[in-house]
Length: 386
Ligand code: KG4
Ligand code: ZN
Image (cartoon, rainbow, N blue to C red; front, side, top):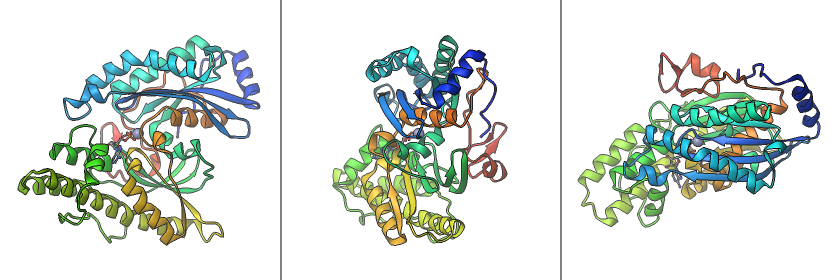
């Protein structure tokens, strides 16, 4: 990922960084790509072990709830209003001071451009004022590395990244070395949860609300499609499922029972689709990784990975295929700055620095090679979406 560039650090500071890299580094992470304003302080030892010292997340649910979804302009303003205070809180909670920071890492994309700019500008200001390196982080790389915040998760591993903006299956071979095995051709899984929840009047945020209501319903009650089922590739499609939910809701009696049954049936369909697509990706992963004495690792990350039924379905799939399941704790599934600090620390240790002129990128595919050659979810003047 081409984020390395010369930074305007003084030579003394550059030498200083080289010295602390041998001892370990303290990195401030900043996240503002959607509707969570977050900051975290993480210490990375020279042995590669990460210790999270603080993680603060301010949700904007209240600001967006009355609109039934995230409004980009409102999100950007809320980030700008909250970001300084959230950074201050993260530092206070870590017990450290600004002068203890060795680098500042911020999400530079992909995401809602106004929000990304708010976080990135705060990071640039700190980088300049403290004369410490700036690391521009790909938000998706944060999700991809998030299991490593809580447990040992050596490369390589198969990753299912399911969030509000993305649904991808990737082979994670190393830092910055990602091969996409499959991706959504239309909506993301989280988007399907949110839009289905909205249609059923379940409010915002849709995913968690739908999961709560689904517990009371019958997952076999409503017949819904399983897009791409039993096809050989590992791509996803959720648009048809979302439309089928809207049709079923229109025809229903709109009772609480109907709501619960449709929510449970939708959730079951998503579980089936994710399992079916991941099965193909597992076959591809094993074929390319070759036989192994130890089980291959499978990671599920992103906001949708907090869904208990999805975790259960993927646990069963892993058992059937001899994979070890590694799922980050819930606080690291949804957007957070700890994963951004971790990705930043890893890139800092790999020798990367971002220039102060680094730009916020609304689109920034994780595996730029295959996304450019074969974008799954559209490509315009601004480049491939994913
Ligand atoms: O990773 P994330 O916080 O933000 C993005 O990078 O998009 O993911 C947010 C998405 C939303 O679509 C939200 O509805 C979904 O994750 N989500 C869930 C659950 N919790 C969050 N979906 C299903 N079940 C949940 N429990
Ligand atoms: Zn995310």
